[in-house]
Length: 277
Ligand code: KIV
Ligand code: NA
Image 1 (cartoon, rainbow, N blue to C red):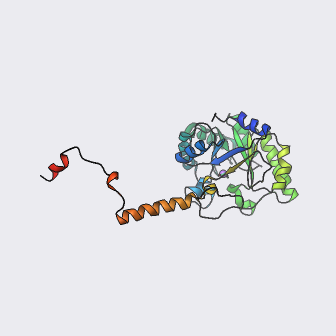
Image 2 (image 1 turned 90 degrees about the horizontal axis):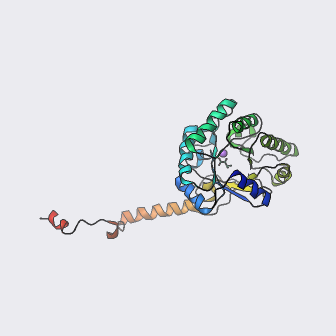
């Protein structure tokens, strides 16, 4: 597949061709996403839960995400690579935001960074774009600030709340974001807001009236065993297949069926006999 560029995403939106985005957190995940032909890969701060075992996204650090993002970069050729800036790494000032975004470009080779919310994030987005780094916005359910949202729940369920989502999305677009993620927003609200925007909108739990979808790797592959959001569809049962595989290995080690003769190495001709001489 040809390299995805920002122009590719805009062209897909214009043509009404859905954009496909998936998260990845390591080299094999990146290779799999590439082989499957996705348009874009996000190293989400969802890594906090999917691969690092934290119970929310707020704990993951810049250094932890940089290591994972660099591994994804080494596995990716065609898809656009977006790196999430974690909680606490961009909110304090434009300078902090630019410095963190620069680290993701220099140390992990991302094509763009993603930051959450409207409000003060609009200025952070403008500053990062002005420093020459493309930015993806993220509105609706923004897990980094779940405390002020009243939990992991849909946002924009009243007309007033939906108007706030629209205002945030328009402000982020005006600040120079090349695309936006809409997370957990009622389908009717999304359908009303997307036509107001020129940039591609990638939905997750935002219904069909968007320009593309993103899902978390571990969710769509059925690797997760914890709580599953309403918007998740499991397209495979990799978690169960993984446990089955390890259980079969354990069983064969315990029964002696593994390793078989073909899994062993042979000495050079005539050498084994000398051991017993
Ligand atoms: O961290 C993440 O995986 C995300 C996507 C769900 C959009 O931000
Ligand atoms: Na995220």
